[in-house]
Image (tube, rainbow, N blue to C red; front, side, top):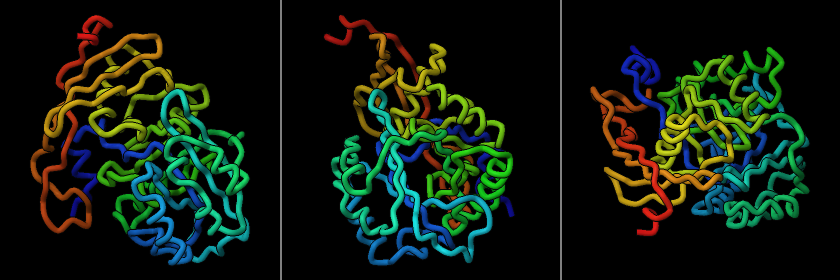
Length: 313
C-alpha cells in the first residue's frame, strides 16, 4: 500500500503555499514518545499540556515539542530543558533561547505579546536571550500523526545530526505529512517539503547568511497560505532570495480566489492573483485518512508589478 507522501510525490503535488501558519514559534524540549496530540499525549505533564494549549489559542503562537535526534522511546526527561522562541515576521525576525528546570514557567509568558513579536516576555519569564548558535532545522518525526513523518523524518534528522549539522531537532508537528520529510528552518520560518539532507544543509547555510532557498520551499509561516504562495511567486519572478526583503502587505478576497499585495523593502510592489485549486485525482490526504479527498492547492494565476499611483487608485 502506497503512503500518502509517495502518492503526493508521484502526482507531483505542488508544495508552495502549504506551510503551517504561525508568526511566533515556541519550542519546549520533551524527550520520549509523542502521541498524535503531543502536548497532551507525551511524558509532559498532562495538566500543563492542556494549559499551554489553552493559553496559546488565538495568540499567533504555535507551540511544539522538540527532542534531540536518535533513540528516544525510553529516554529520561532531562532536569534542564531547552526552550526556544522565534518570531518570523520580516523586519522583526528573532530567535531567542532559554533553559528551564520548571516547564510550568512557560505559563508565565504573555502569549499575546509573544505572538506580536515581543521578546521581552520570553526574557522576563524564562531568562531568554538571543540565540547565538546556528539556525534551527526542525524535522517532523511524529509517527503518531502520520507514519510518513517517522519513516522519512527520523532518518533525515539522524543523518543530519550524525554528519555534524548543528541546530537539528525532531519536532512534533509541522502539518502536511504528505510532503514528508518536512522541515522548518528558524529564525525566518520557511518550511520545506520532501526534504533531503543536502537541501536542508543548503537551507541552513542560506539562513545563516540571511538568504532563502526556494527549492522545495512550502512558504513562510508568517503568512496565510495565499500569501505564502504569492511571496514565493514574486521571489521566483524577480530572483529575490534575501530573507527580509519581501512582506505580504494585504490579502483581499476569499476562497477560492485572492489578490495579494507583496512589497519589497526597496519600495517595489506586486499584485499577485492566487486561486485555490484541488489536487487530482482524489487520494488520501494522510496515511490515517479513511476517505479519499482532493487536497487544496494554491495556484498563482498572475504576478503584476504596480506603481505607487496604481496603489493609490
